[in-house]
Image 1 (spheres, one colour):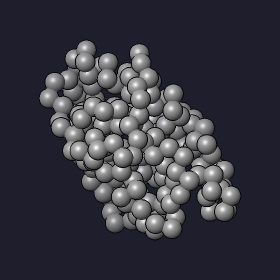
Image 2 (cartoon, helix red, strand yellow):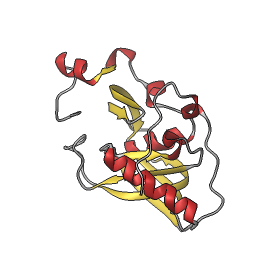
Image 3 (spheres, helix red, strand yellow):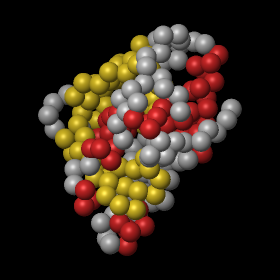
Image 4 (tube, helix red, strand yellow):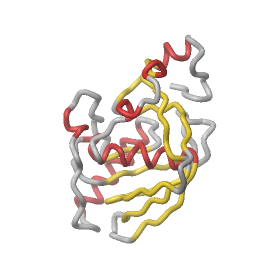
Length: 181
């Protein structure tokens, strides 16, 4: 219904712990989720958490069939994930470049679990129970971090592998298939 402004790094609301959703299947929750999908799609994002648009609830969305920012990535089912819990499935982690709609124009290398199990609820209160791997797992972990007041910049593996996308491309640290913008 509406594209909402995305809060940017520096806005203290991004560092607050989001509270659990108690009422499902409400017009307010449905409207929030619709606005989140509209906003994510308008920004070519892979996911979005409610705190990124100034709503302190434990609501995250993610998913796409194709995405111009991640052309090499496999599709991720469009998902509403409320009050999520994540459990790693093993100790394997992978470092890769990440960006964020709240940190526009920048990228950094972050280590994430490669296989996870996540649970939560959809907008109607139905259980969500999924095993994910690869980019899907990375996106879920990134969005759920937002619900705990964590931005990917706090998880950088190496501060020297963080910068403006244009400069990283010019320096040859990124290539356009890893991170087009």
